[in-house]
Amino acid sequence: MSLEIKRVTNRSDMMRFVKLPLRLYKNNPYYVPALTFDEINTFNPKKNPAFEFCEADCFIAIRDGKVVGRIAAILNKDVNKFWKQSHARFGWFDVIDDLEVSKALLETVEQWAKDKGMTAIKGPLGFCDLDHEGMLIHGFDQVGTFATIYNYDYYPKHLEQLGFTKDVDWKEYLIDIPTELPDRFTRMADILAKKYDLHMAKLTSNKQLVRQYGKKLFQLWNETYNVLYGFAPLTDRQVTYYIKLYLSLIRLDLISLIVDKNDDIIGFGISLPSLTEAFQKANGRLFPFGFIHLLKAMRKNNKVDLYLMGIRPDYQQKGLIAMIFAHLVPNFIRNGYRVAETNPELEHNGRIQALWSEFGPRHHKTRRVFIREF
Image (cartoon, rainbow, N blue to C red; front, side, top):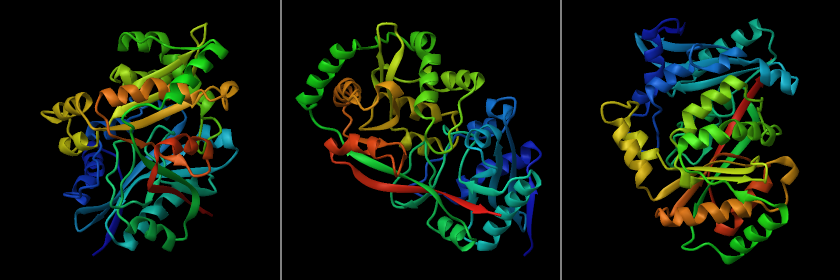
């Protein structure tokens, strides 16, 4: 049974690439499928602005005419420049439980990277920090989210057998939402608002959010996240892309913006109703019925995902997260959310993890980026 590694060069092969996980994880209760058209657009240079500074190729592993694995090779020039490194990335890595297939796919990416003068490959990573990243190494019996990767437990075993080592870990937490917000958060929020002359932005529509705060929000993201693993500043085209992708659909009661007297954003908290079950029911398709499941999940849910949070560097360590909590948590309670799930947090980011200590966090998942130098 010969194994062929084929570079994706046409739409037919791209469809085989994006649909492999739907077959590999069929009937798996923990896997959350991505939308097929989103996956295709991600690898379309005309759609994804990251191609301004990235190169990428997709590969599929074929045995007896059947796709048994896939991988994407990515070179992010901005990240390499920012961190003064010569690394390539691999992502969209899915494979049957066969070490030979994993070895062939990863060696293909390694040769691709060597041909471009790189000295290491690491992943799973996407084009930028707003893509899915990190291989699950703990929590295989926990359902994923639409913003994270789910994989079988043999994936990390394959990488370790092939000489890959840990580069960084992220942790994820489940948090019980209280039936009422502790008074100290409200008092602290009032004190901080008066002390620093700050207030919560009044949001009346998604159009107003986009027009008045869209660019400011992602400019602050660039300032806030620039010390985190794998960061590179979002370009103007990327900012426009993510504004259209996220802010036009987000629920206004689940976003919190702290602004100063000049209407500049000082801090932000963005959350979304859990879309896990909706994406599972959609099974990669928005139409004809997938969008209905998503709309229902946005309106009624018992779980919320804590997506992004940040404070401007010159206001950090002043307790301003209390203002975000004082604004968001009562809305969580009114919406009937009982549990919140954090986005992946870097293992050494103790400051962000300390935020949840008031709410009895439960560490339920860990994910890792692996690296192999050559």
